[in-house]
Length: 358
Ligand SMILES: [Fe+2]
Ligand SMILES: [Fe+2]
Image (cartoon, rainbow, N blue to C red):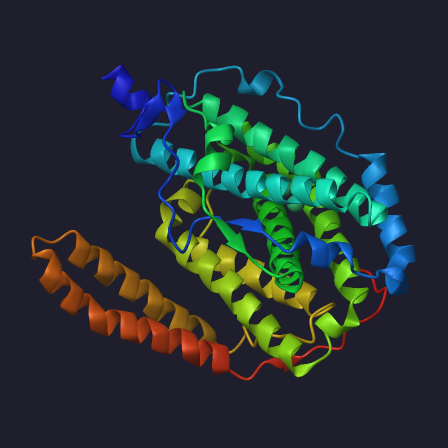
């Protein structure tokens, strides 16, 4: 009884080490890129801003922040059953995402060291931050009698190759959306301390500033490569990345709305806020923003959610697998159609303000 309470159905590689969650389109990704192309980048147009960002990284504001205090030292067995499962899943997804940032930045720091020392040092210092974030989350998992074998994760995960330009779009957005996610949870719990059921959320205020600085670094890097931002391809790709990041988060979070409910948050309202803020922030560097205030935006995403529910109902039914495929086909088609229509929705032009406050 006690054992099942501690480990609600998690598979383990060895005692206490959780089998990583299965990779799907919606799980955090690991990236690799063309390191030589990145090393050849001329950043001189925006070098001053990058130097200023490097100075900020060097200050290391959060050097003493990630220290587990007395509040962690208690039993967390009262978080049990489904809630415990949701907590572990949240910690695992966050840890994997932070660790994926660590690996990519570390490798970039190493590979760019000789040819682009300024950018390399920025990557190294960002990898320092991400290692702290991932480590802190992994420690939190140990409060639930589990942890992730990050070495195993490094070797076992598949890596998605993106050209440097796409790495910048994707990491910029993931840092900024990470900032808005953390700060929104923090501010909500600051106003409703009764919902702060676990101490990690107290750390989110300073933590999210790391993510904000990381996002600013990618903002500055993209501005040093104006060709990445000012042609018709940049417009199409910005739309693609904004939509992918927003849709992935929305589908993931609504599926896990019970987790947000334990914190007193409505997952849908939370996501709508985070998407709105990230979209506005992105408008300071991308040539456009998505029209997320148009009701059609969430209507179509909600159809995708219903489709996901139908797909899992089919997968869990007793229908033979080959028949399931035919049942799923029209749902996949609807999914693709909704995403295409979302992609084709008229975007809003942004006027990037050089050097404006973010
Ligand atoms: Fe992070
Ligand atoms: Fe980050």
